[in-house]
Length: 225
Image 1 (cartoon, rainbow, N blue to C red):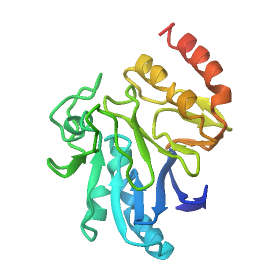
Image 2 (image 1 turned 180 degrees about the horizontal axis):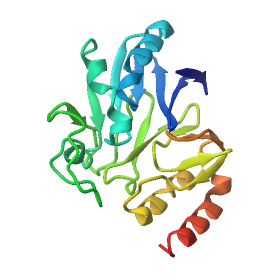
Image 3 (image 1 turned 90 degrees about the horizontal axis):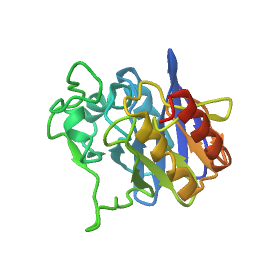
């Protein structure tokens, strides 16, 4: 597994399994947050890196969504680390196997019931910041997909909102509701991050400069969604 420091407070950890799979380690004054948990085989190396980083206590796991390549290491990590796991409340019944992910044929029991806690919301339904990160609901790839924005570092951890190739935004793979995903891409125009990170691809710098072209090409590719 390859580790790369991508900003003052964020490290990217990458492995390969047909495609690249990234998770992110974020440090603030309270300790360490893990964003996504990749595949089960990554658990040992993730925890080895966090311990070697020695940046304070391991505080929590934040999930962009509940697909198996984003939650695979959670149970192994929790065997020795009692930390809370968070996802959007909309996502939880899908990752627990209560609801069928859109256009999937089988329920996915990706995490045990009552293990995952909902991200905190204010009285208006806005997601509250946690661990130096602000979550934003970005449905499409999954019903409760979220991205996490690190305002100090101006980095957007975008999960599967996009893929990327050679620094260019591309549509996410295996996305049942692409129209919603394209609409959710507007978060890039709202936040204007300097750097955007995806699970299955490389870094995209100043992604807002590509947003209009990305939306146009994706809508054309998927039949004028």
